[in-house]
Length: 186
Image 1 (cartoon, helix red, strand yellow):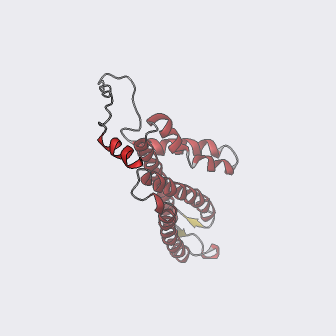
Image 2 (cartoon, rainbow, N blue to C red; image 1 turned 45 degrees about the vertical axis):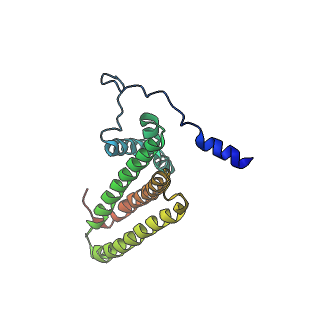
Image 3 (tube, one colour; image 1 turned 90 degrees about the horizontal axis):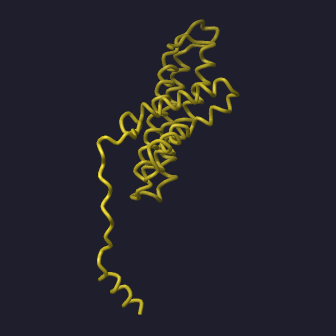
């Protein structure tokens, strides 16, 4: 009985769907994420952090998902859209992380009595290298089961975005502390 149903299902004609509506060139709707998604994500994060700077520091954590949520709202919710939004968020937070790392690595000794910059920078560089290895390994481990699936890029990008966001915010605090002892680029 089950075999007959399976054979009948395999012999059934492919379902047909109505054609998609044509894309109209004069469509007034614009998607700010289609061109410059990373730049839009950076803008959303910067705006969120500016608002958070006027409130208690804990509110900065609300900015971790701000770019993704804005993208999802403005760009769409298909799996491809979600993959794009997660990637835009990840790349924007990684850019902030690189900027913070560069700023910390620019530290120069002001007065040796406050500490020397070179050994501190060396330890920070090693710490950052280990953090980067951990972040990648952690996201790979968390989402091993989704490999090969359409959600895998979304899941890994969101994981890396979350890690990068929290680390970038942590390094922003470290910049504040280091600025008390070292000279650093703006």
